[in-house]
Image (cartoon, rainbow, N blue to C red; front, side):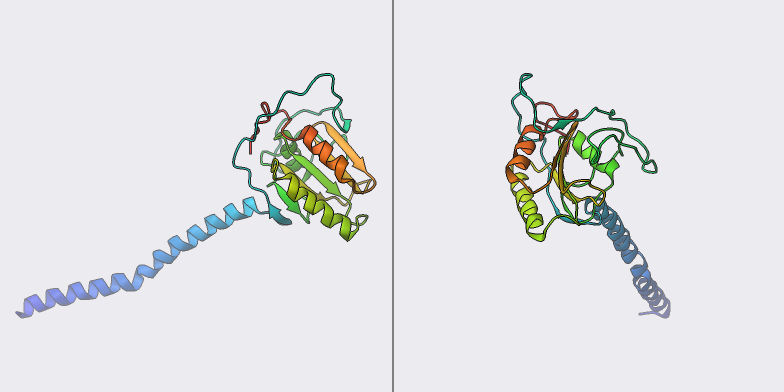
Length: 214
């Protein structure tokens, strides 16, 4: 091999080595970017306080229409509308917990919480046909809380649009809410909770015959 040929081969080898040495700057950057994106996605789906999440991948089963002659379970609460507000805005509701009104654009993930999502998120869940079970963490006993969690897990098998969450400013031990309806309980009552759930789940402004947004 001539000296000129050797120099060309040597230059190519050096160039390949330099490219290889600096390629880590490209690959990890892409990997890091992907991890960051996935982290944000995960953070959006699993916020602080979410112990168990329930997957909602279908609109749900169609429900028979509610008879106009049937009185729905719970106390009807005057509705405050359905407008979306910026996440910086705090809304004043007309019941505790709220049952309708202005809310944020993104609902909370369905599931069991040990730290409450914002009311402005939860109202959006109600609009999507969800049921929210709230409990006062200082009033409920450990056995009652475990029963609530077990019942929530069972009810979500019928329709996973359900949230169980603590509520420190609750004026009763347990409250169950749907869009426009509220039921307060001084003690855990599985039958009343189930009756409220079955009467109201998937029956909200954004649902059509039981089929609702996620």
